[in-house]
Image (cartoon, rainbow, N blue to C red; front, side, top):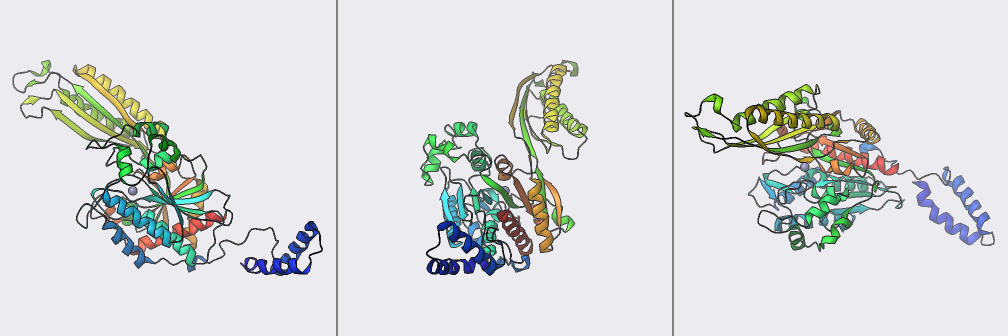
Length: 471
Ligand SMILES: [Zn+2]
C-alpha cells in the first residue's frame, strides 16, 4: 500500500531533480530510490489483499432488502415468484440488477442473448478475470433465493471488498446468466451453454419457439436484445477466457441444514442424462383377454422401471441415481389393458462413464423386455446426456483457506442439481459455494435462507474472489 501512495510523488520529484540522466540510468535510479523508500523490491507485485479477513463486513440488511425488491418483479403473488425469460417482469428485474451493478461501480455490458456482465477492472487488466454469478429467472410459483443469492450476493461481495479497501489485481466480473431454467424454450442453462460455445444450441435457437409459438429471436428482441440469428455465436467465449469462475447458490437439499454446517464446498456437479421411451402393445378388454394372450405395454413399463433401479444400484456407487419420473398409460382405464406407455427416465452420476453404462443397460433392458412381452419399443430417445463437471482443485483449496480464515466450518459435497457452473466448467476452472436452505426446499414459495447463512456465503465468496484475483 505504501509504495502505491508514494510512487507518484517520487516520480515527480525524480523527474524534476535529475533531468540530465539518460532514460536507462534514470529508471535504475528511480527504482533504487523507490526500493529504499518502500522497503519492497520495486518490481514485486503490490500487496493486493493485505486487508484482514475479519474486516470484511456484509451489509446483510441491504442485501435482504434487495432480495425482497427483486422478488417483487414477479408474475405470481408473493411470496411465490414467477419470472420467465424476456417477460416484462424479467426486463424490469434485469434493469434492477444493472442499477445495482452501476451503484457498485462496475462497468456493464450485455451480450446478444442478455447475459449481463459487470466488471471491476483490476490493476493488471490484461490478465484473465475472476468471474462469479448465477441466474435470476424463476420457474412458475418458485421462491426468492434460487440463483438470486449468487447474483445479488456476488454484487454485495464486490461491495464488501470495496469497503475493505481491497484493490483487485485480476479484474473481477459479476455475471447474470440468461435463462438457467428451461421454462420458456425448454432449454436449461441457455446463457451459460452458449458462453461455453455450444454450436448446436446456437443453430437450434434460430428455430426455437415457446408454447405460444413466439420465436426465441422475437422474444429476445422484445426484451431489447437486438438479436440477429448470426449474432448467437458472438456470445461464445474462448476456453480459459476466465481465470476462474465461482457460483454461490443455496444447496436446494437438506444436508447442510441437518448437519448444522454453514458452507458447502462443491467438488463435482453431477450431470443428468434423460431418456424418453414408448412401448406399444395390443391393449384389449381387462376381462376378455386371457393372460397368455396379452402384450401389456403397461407391464413392460413397470418392468423397465424396476430394471432402472437395479442397474443404478448395480453401479455400486452412492453417486449413481436414477428416477422414473413419468409413466403414462394409455388409455388409462381400469378395465383396459394398456396399449401404449410413455416413460421418462433421469439418471445422474458424477462419473460420466459409469452413468453411460447405466444408460446402455437401460437400453438393453428396454429391448429385451419388449421382446419378451411381445410389445414394440417404438421410441428410445436420449434427450440429453451432458458430461458432469469437476471443481478445480486449486479453487477448492482457496475456498477451504477462506473458510478457515473466516472461522466458518464447511463440508465437501456434490451438487446433484444442475447449475450454470456445469457449463462454465467447460471454459474455465470452476468452483461452487453452497449455503443451507430451509428444509432443503427449492422451486417453491417456502424456499428460504437465513440472514446469517447468506452473510457467511457472501463473505466466503468475497475472500475467495480476493485471493484468486491476487494469483
Ligand atoms: Zn439455480
